[in-house]
Structure formats: C-alpha cells, structure tokens
Length: 327
Image 1 (cartoon, helix red, strand yellow):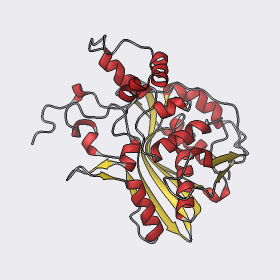
Image 2: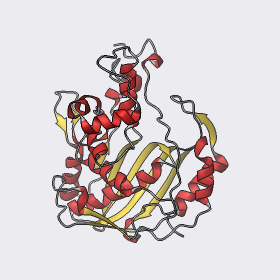
Image 3: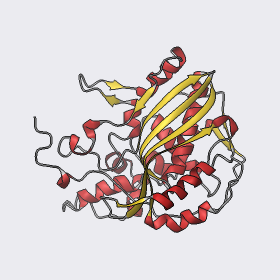
Image 4: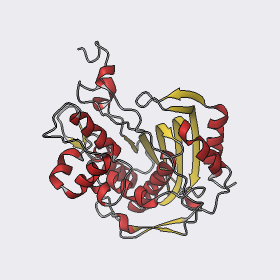
C-alpha cells in the first residue's frame, strides 16, 4: 500500500466519523476525531504528499526558522513564506483597534506584510512572535534563574553520546505563556499545535514521533508531515545515523467545513511515488545547517487544491476566569 493512503484514509475517517465542532476563535465549523496515528518509513521515500501540490519552499524555510531559534516573521516574509503572516497581523490589529492610530495606523494584511519586508524597525517591533516554536526549541526560559535552555542542542548531544537512552524529547508546551495559565496580558494569542517530539535510535537508525494536539488535516498536516520528516533526516545526518521512521500521532484531527469539497476531490486522486530528499554532507551541526543544503528530487504531484486558512485558537483575556492565577 502506498504510504500516502494513511493520510487519505484518515481524511475519509473524519468525513465518516467526525463530530461537528466550532472553532472558538472564528466560529468556523469543523469535523473532528481524536487519537489517530500514521507512520512513514523514511528509507522508502520522502513523504511530501502527492495527491495535491505542497509548497516545499515554505516548509523548508519554516523548518529552518524553527531550528535556528528565530521568532520574527521577517525571515519568512523575505523568503516568500506567507503561512505565519496572519498571526502578527492579528496582534497588530488589536493594538490598532485600541485607538492608537498615530502609532499603529490601520493597515491591510498586504500593507502590513509589505511594511515588514521593507521597514526593518517596523519588522523588529511588529514582526515578533514571542514564545513561538523557535524560542521554545532553542531558548526556553528557565523558571528558577532565567537561563536559556537550548533543548534542540541538548537532544543532539543526547543522541550522539547516549543513543540507547529514552529521554531525547523536546517540548514546546510551556504553560508559562499559554491560555489562563499565563499572567494576564502575557498569554499567546496564537496556538502551539505540534507540541512534543521524541527521538529514538535503534539499529543505527533515527526515528521521531511527533504529538500534535490539534491538526488541520487539509492545510496544516501536509506541512507537518514533511517538516518533521525533514527534521528527522537532518538530525540523523548531524548525529551520524540513517533515517528511520517518522511517526505522527494526533490528538484532535479535523477538517474545516470550508475544506470538505477539496478533501473529497483529494481522496479520489491516486498517490504518485514519493520524492527523494538529499541532505548535503556539509550538514555537520545545528550551526552549519542551512536550507540550501537540502535538495528535493523527483517531486511529481497532482495539481494544487486551494483552501482558506482559519486563523484558529489562541486566548482572549475576556475568557479568563476571575479565580485564575490566584496564589
């Protein structure tokens, strides 16, 4: 069976068995199942989905953005990666709506993105997404003394020097900045969805399991499959192993109502052979890795299927219970 069938079968599972819910932020409807899993053997091809065209450039640069610890969207904007633009714009609009027009003039999303691209000072202030993946991966703030913990570097050291141990885990789920657990005014206004991943060495092969608490199956998950598969292969190269499996474990896996017709079309397409991902021998450490050292070969896909992104989740201070954060 073609490994992409796992993904198509999960889409069908959601269509057949999903429970209708509403996204609390936008009100958009979605069909949801809970607790599913897919597995991809990375020695048998790179799982960039073929039943629709998936933008590899965006995936690769987003992954580098995470791995290098960046938290400002300017890098992504400069490399024509639009997938995070809505989140800093959402924060900017909230500031503008407070009436501070002289400091925060009203801008469309397109104008906001252009200003991020062309105005370094504007980007420095308004392109920043504090406490996002890159920070949690490379500079988690310790609660005892404020030191910065580089989780990804620690994982590399563990995999190289203690391959039989079972604790090579990286978590992005930091309660200090999440929902009503955060101090008032400090909660993230955008969701962290792929929150924990765990590496394992067996038979000189490196495998990775991701736990994704919330999964937009049509738009987001094709990115996540490819991103964490690439991460596994890059980490294998750095640590001196062969790629093993990427295991993708889901909490809430869902399809938005406005993606149903696209999903039905995708399910009826036959998968094509997976492409190859070639990683240069120049990749010797986290510090030497660059996107241009990764090459995608022989990617042949069905045409693109478009869908509107739901800027979902996040926390609104008006939802905070009065008793929250009491000592």
